[in-house]
Image 1: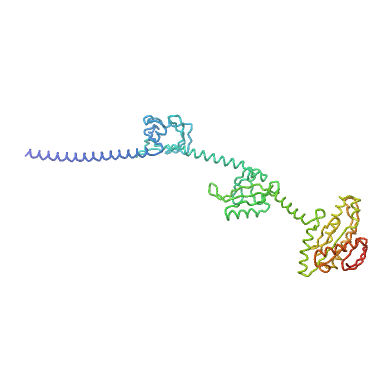
Image 2 (image 1 turned 120 degrees about the vertical axis):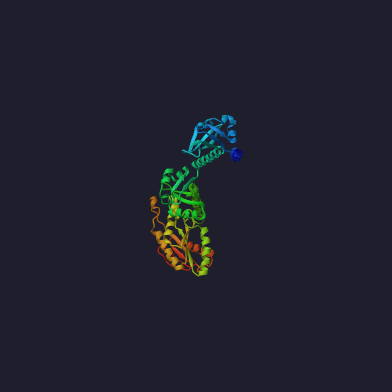
Length: 470
């Protein structure tokens, strides 16, 4: 009986022990799996940090290095065992620190790492705090990002920016940036010199349109073009300098944006003033050339070149419209005496003043012609013989009443002889008309001068010879 009970108790004990052993085996199996998972996780972690191009360090709470990846070792040129246990600050030149960001949990600084060979390499060091599940500080994790290429790019950018500033500051062309409203954002020295201002005066200028533009609407037209097509090219603009004088520029401008994306207008202006003056001078020279081509240089009246061209045109118009026109041939009597007495210069000045008398007496479309020496021709479009005679009497009276070279201290009195011919009554072609008018003048000169002779007319004028028909 007792043996049976002992056997049963022993069996129960064996089963209990078997359960404990099975439980222990399960715990050991789970532990093995956890350790394997941890090994795999560590291997995976090592693979990740060793494959990154960034330098990695693991620090204890005292900032001593406990782990490092291959990238950082390669950068520094050290072996792993030479790095482990060092304080992280020993890896870089402490005097080169440049703080980017700092807080209780994170730090970001720019440093120069010191390699085994004494080189200094720029890096960005980002460090973060590690805590356990209870929130207790267990260490730090840090990454070093190589800034060499970025520094090279920044250096090149700075060189480009400096080059641009040098070009901007030293350019002979005026360069500017302004807002759409017209306020200047930046101007280079050449632009300021061009307008006679200091750069800071232009930057402070509030009403650009009314200050710099002779016509403020011109700026608005330029702005409308830029807004419509995006730019203006080779546009001639007249601006007002600080001293009030005009400057002509050739403008190039386009729409753009600043660093914040706000709209701006930027452009270049080239001083065009001297070229503009040269162009104006050329235009005046061309106009003067055209003027001299058909005008007498001494008297300012038309010359014979213009006379012949005008008479051909006038004769065609007269035939078509069946309207007459008349010619007056005029010769100053005894003009040689004026020249012999007072000299050629005074004689020339006298001819100029006689030409002035002709201009004052006739009205357009009539015009005077210097025919040579002291002879003149007056062309009277639309005038028949009677009206031509009246015009000639008026001119003759004006000459008789005038005193010449008063401004030179002289009191010269003149008379003149006149011959008249009318188209088509006297001749139906220009050459014949000129010949008849010349012959009429010759009749007066033969008869004693100081008179009027009209073809196909017979009149007696005061101080004139009797007129007879040719």
